[in-house]
Image (cartoon, rainbow, N blue to C red):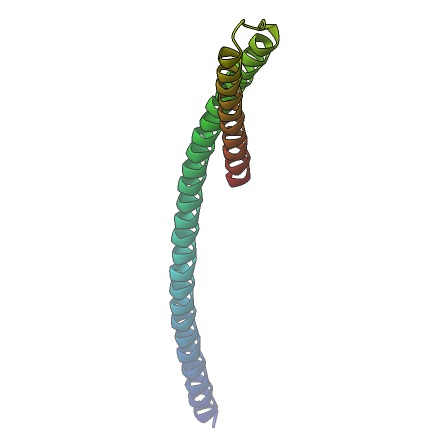
Amino acid sequence: MTDHNFDNFSHYFNKWQKNLINFALKRNLVNKELEKYIKSFQTIDSEIYKALFIAKEYYNKKHRIYNQKIKRLKQKEIEFKQLLDYVNREKRSLKEPKKKDEISTSIRYIKQSIKEIDDKINNLSNQIEELNLDV
């Protein structure tokens, strides 16, 4: 009878040992799958980081370019304002010529040039505002 109990015990022990081996194999498979997921997440994370880095470089470059354009346009605006001030001073300092026709033509030309300069200043101001909005 003891042999029967021992056989029965060894049978259960063998069954338990097989179950442990199966569980260990399943655990190893799960660990391998988990490693695959972790590696895929790491590659995705590195790709996202690279894309963000490239986008940051691209937009920094664009930002620098727009800042340079705005700086140039502001300088042009200052130049045109100085030119307009000069023309206005010259207009005020003009003495009345002897001939009436000369006065009217010179005033007409001065008004026309002042208007053109004003239009250029307004255009430059609009361009600066648009570039500021774009940036």
